[in-house]
Image (cartoon, rainbow, N blue to C red; front, top):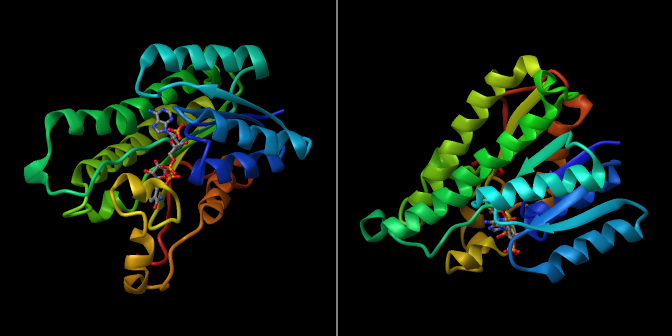
Length: 247
Ligand code: NAP
């Protein structure tokens, strides 16, 4: 049976992806940082529908916690076959001229280093050269990587640019090792993330300016992620799907 880890699987896009993966037959690990109750709720939703799931608390920016999480997954479910690098953070909307080194480093530690660390541990388990049977990785980037988020969070946008480069580079590095690496770039999706930027209603503010005149739902992003992980996307690697309503 396929084993999937969804980082930041306790809410938003990660939650929708974890539930859809379970419905598609994966054993699912729901990673979270602080909100155990929310992670347990996702696990219970999966279990009560007859699936298999486990919640693991780990800060993806912390190397030792990431390594311990993968060991726990090995023990509970066996080696990972699918990774969704999804947990991401942003802070209050502001201009570059007001950013502190502390804030920039926090964003990069989670959104970039965290993605690298999870990719590293996944590759060690999936690659043919390590005795693995291959696998698939999806990195959740953002349309911000293309648009730059001026006046809001250029630090966050730049971290997503790095995620895109990680996706391209790693996809080429492990293509012959049975591992496919792809990215999704959501646009304005209805989740709690916008409250972290200080504007919970951000999607509704901008939606009229979007070509499709609406924000997106987490489930619409999850569909693309699950497809990219599936055997239906068996010849797809180093690719990106934009889910931004035409933006
Ligand atoms: P969200 O609702 O804010 O959820 C974030 C999730 O990440 C939560 O489960 C949170 O866990 C977890 N998390 C945060 N920091 C973590 C860390 N250091 N280690 C482990 N888990 C951590 O986010 P979302 O809107 O669903 O976004 C998911 C991904 O999509 C992110 O990478 C984001 O950049 C990207 N994205 C979102 C949008 C959008 O419009 N929403 C657009 C483009 C891209 P706790 O609750 O336990 O803290």
